[in-house]
Each structure stands twice: as C-alpha cells, then as structure tokens.
Amino acid sequence: MRRLLPVTDQTPAAPGTEQPGGAAREWSLDELAEAYAYPADTGQDRGWLRANMVSSLDGAAQHEGRSQPISTETDMRIFGTLRALADVVVVGAETVRLEGYRPAKARAAFAERREAAGQGPAPAIAVVSASLDLNFSLPLFTAPLVPTLVITGAGAPQDRLEAARQAGARVVIAGDARAVDPARAVRELVALGFRRLLTEGGPRMLGQFVSAGVLDELCLTLSPMLTSGDAQRIVGGPGLAVPDRFALAALLEEAGFLFARYVRI
Image 1 (tube, rainbow, N blue to C red):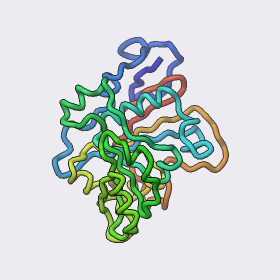
Image 2: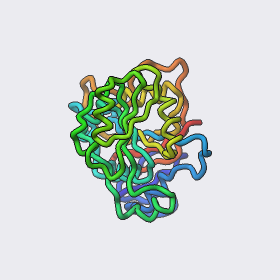
Image 3: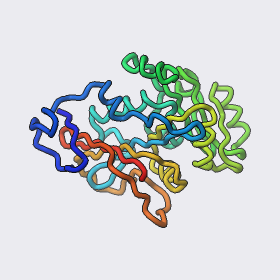
C-alpha cells in the first residue's frame, strides 16, 4: 500500500500500519495528479522545470544502461502521471537512444484535466541534441500525436536539420554554436507556450540544467536496491561551486520505494 509520510517524520512505517490522518491505502490517479500538480501560477514569462529520476540506494541512476531495472510499477504509474501533467517532456538524445523513446500517448483518465488547463491531448517530446545524431525514421518523429521538437544549436549540421524537418519534427534553436544553452532552451520552450516542463534525463542533460540554475523541482524515486558497479548518478557533469539547496515538499512510500518531491528554496 502507498502512504503519504509527513515531511516532519520521514521514517517509513511498517507495511499496512496507519499514518497520521488515516489508514494506509493506494492513491487514485486523481489524487496523484493533485499531489504532483504544477504551481498554479509561474508567471507568463517563465515556466516550471521539474525533473523525474530514479536512483538506487548506492546512487546508481541505471543498471546495465537502463533505468527500468531499478524502477517499479508504482514508479511507472507516477512517471505516467507526471507526463500527463506536463506540456512538454524534455529528454537528451542519449536517453532517447538507450530507452527506446516513443511518442507520448493521450490518456483518457487525464483528458478532462488537460482540457481544463488549456493543454493538448498529450505532451510534446522535446529531444535535446547538438549533433542531431538521431534516427528520424522512428515513431517518435514520424507518428507522434503532438509534433516532436528537436532542440539544437545554430551550428547544427544542415543535413541533419533538414532530415529533422522532413520527418515532421519542429526544430528549436537554443544556442549560437552547436552546443545547446540549457537556460535558453527553457526560455525558447516557454516562448512557444510550454510552461509546464518535465525532464526525464539523462544525467548529463540534467546536470546542465542544474548548472544553469533553471531546475525548479526534482521528483526522485529512491529504489531499495544496491547495484554496485560504476553506473551514472542522476546528475552528471562538473560539480557546483556551492551545492544547490532544495526543500522536501512531499514524500510517498510503497514497498520500500520512496517517492519524493523537492523544490528549490
């Protein structure tokens, strides 16, 4: 059973025991949507960027190159809820290749909520890639419900830019050279009307958002598993001069998995 743990007492109770405010029970999709709702007003000129990542107890973001082995059915249910609340899902090219990304689907359970929020039937997927070394024949590009975006720099190879457009992708330039400026990428997406942003990694791209100071929220699943090895952490890249402080906003627990929401202070 899933339980909401009070943020003032973060010690998980034994399965099946009561928490303050009521007995343990499974949350509905509507309740999850309320628990993970975006801020009501982020301002017209900025969005809200949240990340959704999973980590093992020893800090691994992946096992054998993929996140699925350290995940769980409930984690995937929250994963789906976060997608259903977003305007756009921002993801790195390497993660697209490793995880076999497909277009986001329209979900009947969230249709009314999305319509009321002025959203389309499903979030767009935005792939960040400097080289555009992507397979544009995949369904992610050729058969999305909402056109897929590719975010790249002004110096991206012209033949790859043309291949992206020919496949039906919407090209967003967010850098003066080949590299993508993460802060500019966020600004460009907001300017296109995507204010509720969700990034699912990978670690290198999330590290760029963290370094740029544009990450507003981290939804972190802590998996009760040990993997050992040298897998990536959830955030990669150079360290920050001063650690970025976040506050715990909510915490769920199921079968030893912890599902936390942290927001920037």
